[in-house]
Length: 211
Image (cartoon, rainbow, N blue to C red; front, side):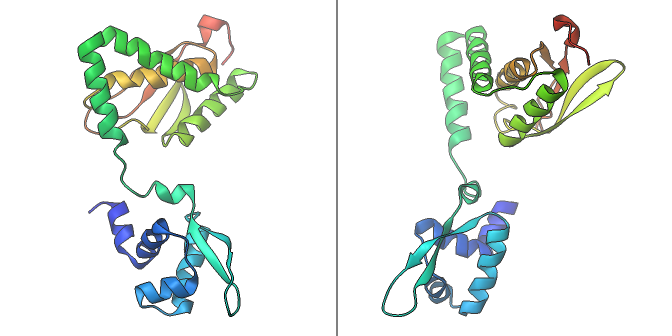
């Protein structure tokens, strides 16, 4: 059982599952789970601190108005999605119909468009920081490493890891995105194994930028 499944099987997870169906009050959650109001409040407080639950106004009735609780966008990430399977299928069909070279060109364009929607700062350092922040928003984790005069972007968690083992060409998305973001050519040196790990070399000399 994965971490997400274990969480959803816990009492806090059951609260999240109920709130995914509809907004509810403390009393409604307590009745559904057979817990006291105070126990539910404790769980909701914890879930609010974790950014998974938020208040959504009040429900007015005969008695005192009761706060309504609902899920945040962050909480939706806990639930399995079919994105990876659908994208893998799409890449397979595109490769069969267009060929590998054309698919890689399309993926590179996807990366360029993803980067073009951002207002990048001036200077190599700030642009590198902004690029890493964008990778983080996509669900990855990376940092800049300076080694033997070279500037590397070392990835520790790939946002496309579910697709990379069967479709390593998706790395073109990140290569193109980072090239646009940093304003310098980027070369990918990624591990495409069962546990993908990204590594990118930034060629600052090509644009005359100082490292």
